[in-house]
Length: 616
Ligand code: G6P
Image 1 (tube, rainbow, N blue to C red):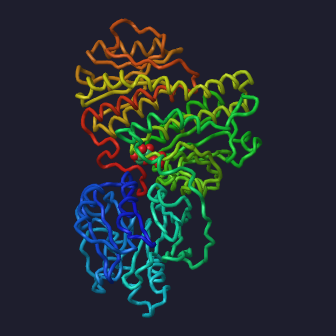
Image 2: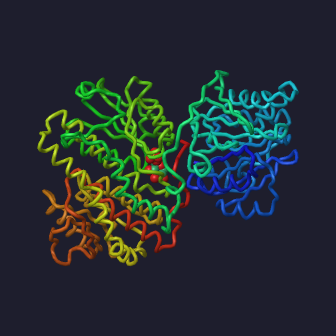
Image 3: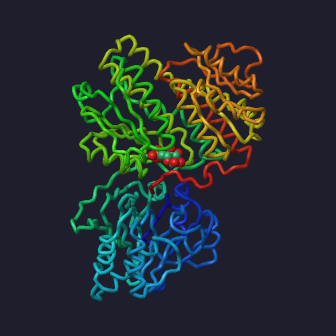
């Protein structure tokens, strides 16, 4: 939520900042702004709208300075206006700041600052922090010492409750930025005689792959020659420089119309990456390098708790189904935002899993911390290497899906599904699953990238179906067992990017309420896989048809539906049951994508949403 970029170096800052900001736009996109320090003053441009609007606005300025900060906003405090857009300049004109997060105690601080004659131009919590730093700056003994600026930021942060990733400039120290984080991501790119601060690596990877991930409670003081890291409590930190393993090409459209489309088609490769090196030599189970638990540790676990948000929560529901079915171990699934407040009673031998593409979702992070506080070990399934959740967990499994930029998760979701399927196998083989069943499970998962490729070949057919259904404003998605979470995911995808009302239900549950919605204007998408309950699902379809509901059926190849029952059919290849959620998800991703395109929606940046939700 909100993206920030800062630059100190030998080049003019503005174009580098704006280029970086474009890559962070998925984090929030209601307004944007930039401040460059030049000629002893801040040049500030801000604009409601996308980064593109800011670029046009910035063209009216002559930005020559080599130190600057910028921001793309997802509004929390204060409406979407130019005045509320960041950066915010302190009322004495000394400091300028960009912020990602929420200052919870801003009301009392604002009252204090008003009593000290600081003034405010915006309704934001951020401007309060900026003026608080200015207040401390004014109190520091006047000197040219660099520490004056740094100390004023540090002292201000001691009074802050809430979350922040900030970058601050001071008019008296032209080649410097002080940045800090607590609860919002921030990293420092260490380039060739230049430093770039950013909310995530995509904003700086075109200039350097060497990065330092800041931890909560750390401040970094960057000058044009060097940087140093200290905690808010004044402990020195030895920085660790990590290497980003992907390149800028991975974060570009490469000929696709949208990132969502690109990421849907990248799934075979993402799935191959998720399974690489993770099957045992005898081909009968999975293996993971980062769980930091022995087989004996796993033997005593008698319950798993999975928690996360959004699409990742649907992956947790699939985990529940697969682990309970194949390993016969009970699984509980919680929304992270609920778990942290509901004070769940928990047994002793419980292992926690949090699932998060970004590794920064604040509710998921809070759930992780709550479970750890209670003394439980927490494993993380994350895509973003070095993310806060990955770092704070006791162990975990990286997805290796590559950067996911479209706000609606696609390749990260299916790679989460694959990983939970592999994990179910891993624990099942420690219990009662035989070698032969394990071997056939492994073969089933190894086939997944190819089966996904085959399913993607249906894209033109699904596009044609989408063009006929794009006019409807209500949809039901109906699936059973492991495909109930995929029904939820199909409905979520359609809601997110097409603004169509859609609901996911277990197919049989549909008759207890949702069936009241059915008429010629409310189509249903049914998941109809081969298997024991094929006929039961067909009966549910009959009930819809009897009420003139249109049906799109996603059916396993070779399965015959009664003639005329489905209005449109999308076939999926036969696969292992553990792979079924992955393969079944592909058609609904494509369907929602093509419907959103047909309705002229901004697929990669749906209204009101942000990819990485770093506020509660
Ligand atoms: C947001 C995104 C979703 C995502 C969810 C959880 O709501 O729009 O696509 O599933 O956050 O994100 P995470 O990074 O924790 O998986």
